[in-house]
Image (cartoon, rainbow, N blue to C red; front, side, top):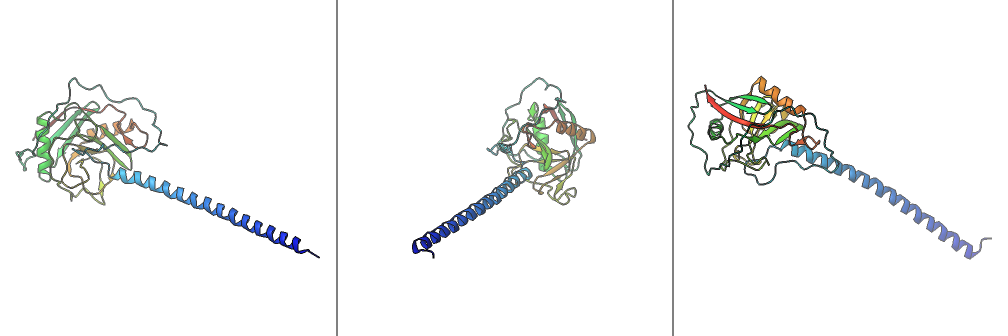
Length: 273
């Protein structure tokens, strides 16, 4: 016969075992839940980087630096040899205007732009009729020497494939002091929200009509919303120069940073033909 005291102890032991089983089960569920949360957070972080990459083309008097945040786990890539020459002698001019320049270009004429860079010449056929304000602004700024000796401060090699230039401060936050309207956002070249390789387009702050002097050169088809004025087409020689710059990589190893190549616009010229 089991005594009352033995029965009481047996019931207490069984209760204790049930409690232990419940605690073990709860801890197991907690670990699974935390693992799922960690996985979701990982997706959110990756998604945030992807979203930032698709909206990277900021600048022109936007006071926040346009460089992407780098996750602590990102390690810089080993630098390839610099494929570019030393910059020409000279310094960036500190120029600033309060208003967009008066429209003086001939909208029926053809204009071309040449960016003589340390990595080679980049020729651009400008879309004068479709983007007259943009072409007029570049004609004005180039004539003032605004772009001369400026660094191309940003290269993206993941998600979108562009080189960003046109900031005299080299930080991603500089501009000419004025803004120009968005133009040509329904250009026939922009199909399925893709800016094709060979496109030159305006950067902006993420808001409408906030373009200034910063622009980006597309060296490989890039998925982007049609929010950036496409105002020219890069020639074949210029596209080769861009691919050479891209091949040298960027500074963070995360796909978005300063180009490893020494990319400086020695001189920018706009010519009517």
